[in-house]
Amino acid sequence: MAAVDRRAVPAGTVVTGLGGGPGALAISPDGRSLAYSGNDGGTWLCRLDGGRRCGTPRRFARPDEVVRGLAFSPDGTALATGGSDRTVRLWDVATRAEVAAFRQPGDVAGLAFASDGQSLAAGSSTGGFHQWHRPVHDRDPTAGLVLSPDRSLLATTGARGGRLWDVRDPWRRLLLSRWAAPPASRLLMSGDTRRLATLQPGSAVTVWDIADRGRPVLHARLPRRGLAGAALSPDGATLATGDKTGELVLWDIAQPGTPRRLTGRNGFRDVEAVDFSPDGRLLASGDADGGVWLWDVREHTLKEVAHHEEHDAAVAVVRFGPKGDALLSAGHDGTARVWALAGPRRAARPAILPGHDQAVWHADFSPDGRTLAITDAGRTTRLWDLRGNRPIAELTHADLRTVLYAADNRTLISASGHDVRLWDTHPGAVAARICQAAGALITRAEWRRYFDDLPYRPPCR
Image (cartoon, rainbow, N blue to C red; front, side, top):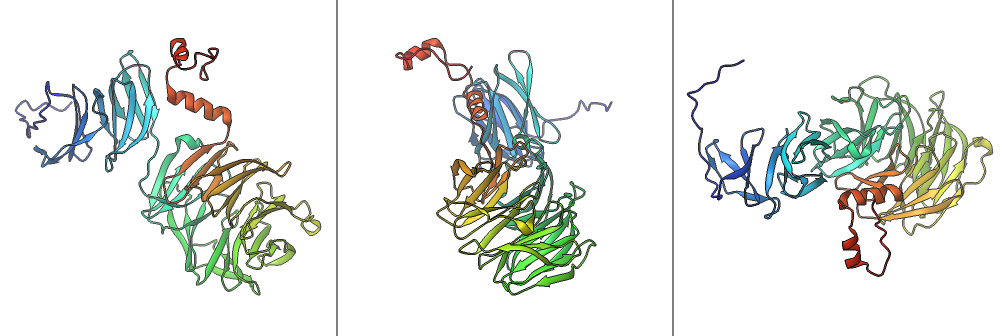
C-alpha cells in the first residue's frame, strides 16, 4: 500500500456560496469540471481553472431536488444525479439536457458508474442498492444504420464516423467501437457479419473488415461514378453494384485492396436496388423502368432466372425474406409487392401491398418472415401481416426513414438524422413500460378524487 503524504495541502478553495456547504461533490475524469449540490436543493457544474478556481457555475437538475449523489461517466459526457425524489437522472454535460431517468424505492444516497460507463449503481435509503444500465446517448446524428441477419449487431454512421453496437437486447445496447467512416446514408452487412459496406451515392462504396468488433479496418474501396445501389454477398466475398448508367456489376472483394470486376450487365435505366438471397445463389435488382430481375450468380455470372415489370415507376427497394422464399420490391409508385419464390421460374404474380401516398424508401422483414415494415417518403411506416397480406399498424414520426426489426420480431429500430430510436409494437409491453415510468400505484383515495363515478380499477398493478 502506498504511503499517505500527510504534508499534502489543498490545491485550492472553491467558494460555492451555499448555506451549510455542498451536499454532494464530483470531479470529472479529466479534472477540469466540478459538480456540486446544495443541501437546500439544486445542482451546479463549473469549469476548474487549473484546479484552483471555479468558473461561472451552470445549474443542473431541479432547484427543489435535494441531491445526495453525483457521478460523472468515465468519458465525462454524462452526469448522474439522485436524491430526495427517489429518481436517478442522467444529464448530457454539454447541453445540460436530461437524457434518462430511473425510479427506485428510496431516496438516492450515492452513485457510481462502472468502469465501462454502461452501468450505474445507486445506493438507497432503504439500505440496498440498485444497478441500472445506462442508455447510450450519442450526440452524433445518425445518418444510416444496418442490422446483421441475426439482429445481434447494429452498425451506424454519422458525421463523426461509424459505430458498432451489440443489440442482442436492443433496449440495452452496448457500444463496441468507433472508427473513422464516411457519413453514409446506406449501409450493408454480409451474412457472416465479417464485412460492412458504407455507400456514398454517386461516388464510392467502402468495405470494412469488422471481424474484430473493437477495431474495424479498411478492407476495400471502390470509386464508382454514378453509384446508385450496392449489396454484399452472405460470405462477404462479392459486391454487387448498380449505377445511374443502368449497369449491374459483380466485384470480387475476397482479398483486401482494389475490387476485381467479375461480370456485368447493362441496358437498364438507373439500377438503384440490389440484394443477395440469404444463401447467396440469387441476386435481385430493380431499375427505373419498374422492372424487378432475378439473377443466378452461383458461377459469378449474371444469368437471368425470372423478372416482372409490375411497378409503374422506379424501383427503390428489393429485399429477400429471411428464408429466401419471398422477394419484396417497392418504389416510387407508392406500392410494395411480394413475390413468392418457391420456384422462381414458375413464380406467381406478385401480391400487391398498397396504401402509401408517397414513394417507398425502405422495407424490412421481421426475422420470422411473418410481418413487414414499409416506410415511405412521408415518414410513415406501415406494418403488414404477410399471412393475410393485411395492414396491422401504422407509425408516423419525423425520425422514421430507415426502420429495421430487432430479433424479438416486435421492436423496431429507426433513425433519421437523430439518435437511434426504439419502437415497441407489442401493446402489453408498452403498457408495462408506461406503468413502470409512472411509479407508485394510484391509491383508492386518488381514484375517488379523479374518477369517483367509476369502480376502482387501476390500470397498473
